[in-house]
Amino acid sequence: MNRSNLAIIMTCHNRKEITLACLQELYQQNVKVDVYLVDDGSSDGTSNSVRDSYPEVNILQGNGNLFWGGGMRLAFGEALKQEYEFYIWLNDDTMLTPDAINKLLQIHNHLAQQGHRDTIIVGSTQDPITGSATYGGAVRSKHWYSNKFEFVAPGEEPQQCDTMYGNCVLIPNSVAQKVGNLDPAFIHTFGDLDYGLRAKKLGCTVWTAPGYIGSCSKNSVRDSWADTKLPIHKRLQKVTQIKGFPVRAWTIFTRRHSGPFWYLYWFLPYIRAIIGYKNLQVSATFAED
Image (spheres, one colour):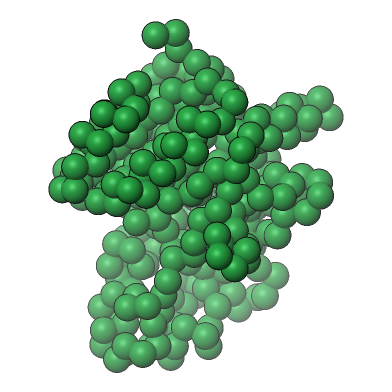
């Protein structure tokens, strides 16, 4: 098989039909890609179904404890060994619109022609039912009391932003060579935000593409640390778990990206879990399952 110049980076766990639907939309794009998919210990037959339908996919096996950060890091690491021209992070619950990948490539080339080098291009997604925006580029909140990264609504032109949520992200090899892989400190959350922020510190830029490149439902806060219907002790328990604000990962993130008063921001999610989701803003990557 002739290798393409673009690698798709994916991870999945026990949602076979969604993963297959994502791959179906991916392979209808008018561009040749090599897919690196981590199956993180699925028990629903995901790997076998993918092999049957898409034998060209490079399937990597996880042990069920990789989560989003670990799975994407494993897939990205394998692809980086081949030094592709471009890499695209793609959540398996993101359904691409026709020609979405070509759109991201065109935006990258357009910015390069304008003199912008080492650019990450972020695709925005919207809810498939309501049409409301869900994930994409992000900018740091201007509120002094907040450590929140706010979604950048896509416009008619590319917009520069601070970082991104990793549902659909185009990373050229020049950026990957500077930044490397996702940081293993982030098991599930914060890895995408951290990557964009590290890229900016290294002189790269992050841009959100115009319009929407696909659909993806926003993760629900139900039964999470942000669910105000849960008692306080349950919220406190959940906020420190892998899909919330695990202490070590959150400490690394705030020390790295929140300035000299990082320790003040460090307390915010735990205070928020106590007093309620709507009463205090703080950064959160309600990340991919």
